[in-house]
Image 1 (cartoon, rainbow, N blue to C red):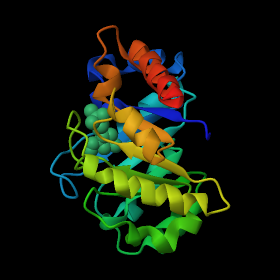
Image 2 (cartoon, helix red, strand yellow; image 1 turned 180 degrees about the vertical axis):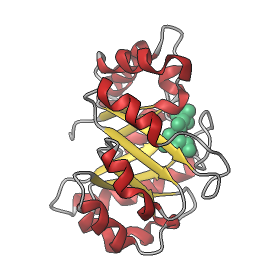
Image 3 (cartoon, rainbow, N blue to C red; image 1 turned 30 degrees about the vertical axis):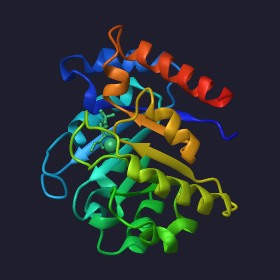
Length: 225
Ligand code: DX5
Ligand code: ZN
């Protein structure tokens, strides 16, 4: 089985404690930080950007996945690369020219992620699969943390997993939105390889580190079922 990764979505952090939360994630077994950038246009919400990325970069060695929920993501590649992002995940729906965007990301040291919203047909990514490192399927409408997982996205995850298995390169299949106990197992069964979670991890009564340990247990038990 491909090894599964856990990515902690910082949106669910109490931002007055972001530094100590990241310290806790760093000393856990989590594999990555997920950094949600929203512009109030592609999605109704506005979140965090370059200054926060610059301040957290020196305090963590974990890869930072930039989830760019912004229109014209191509305009922000260079700045986010300079600020220390490791994966640039943009939305297929937000982009004028997907190939051009991928090529621009390739000019930096960042990996390429492409994301689709729950209602976007899988076919939109067919032409790009050979050129990306990660496909991120949104399992809620992008824009807000703490929403309910949409089970109707499962067939799509399955379809992309099949597509990826036919490809010779390693491509991550990430899911984002409502990932917690119960849905972790469904997502893994459908073929997800990176589990992105905000409230599912940070909402743990003993803190994000304990939330991450629990997730690894769900993963283990899903292997034996
Ligand atoms: C939503 C964001 C997610 C969000 C997930 O648009 O892209 O990364 O933080 O939050 P939860 O896990 O709470 O659904
Ligand atoms: Zn996200």
